Length: 243
Image (cartoon, rainbow, N blue to C red; front, side):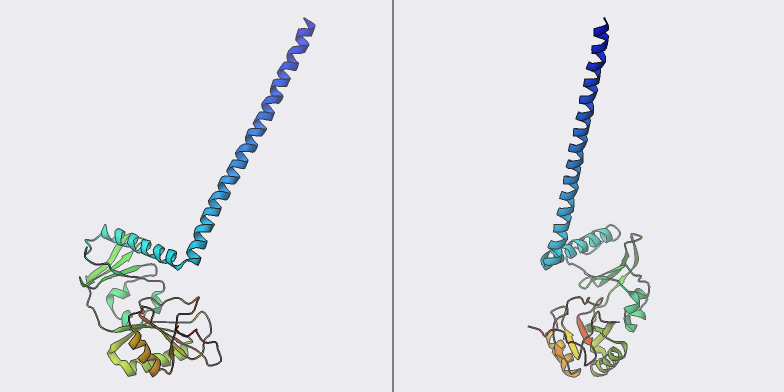
């Protein structure tokens, strides 16, 4: 009987040891699987980020999807026209809106983060606030055949350029935005950011003694601008000319 009593604990001890080893092995497998899974997710999202950064088409597709999301959200609040796509503006900095826009009640209601939807055929303008999921204002929109211009550069130089533009073109153009450039530039460069106004861009270049070029990397398109005017000091570097 004494031998049986001694053997029983040994058998129990061996079983416990196997259980501990099995649990440790299982934990190791689970941790490795979790690490591999997280690494896979991180790699996927990093690849997605690089694809958008390196591929302008992906970036454009992302913008298109965002516009469709905004249209769908507004469509739940208002019966939108079905026969046209709206022009959508994002209000990133309301303080940079031109004085002409600031005088209009519709734009006075805008806050940073809002979206403006313009339906030209339907002559309809909507101001949507996604943070509250509501329409701030809806009103008839009158299409104005004026060129919308954004001016980028040092304050003193861009104010001088604005004065020259308004004196020369009167009501043919509207300065919708003014702001500082991300980098320093020399001379005057005109960018037809919409691709619809090459003749007007050339005329602006003549009036301002500048040239037609491309939007430099790192610079943002001013809200609502069809054409961008970059002005700078003579000693700074110039944006690349248009190819």
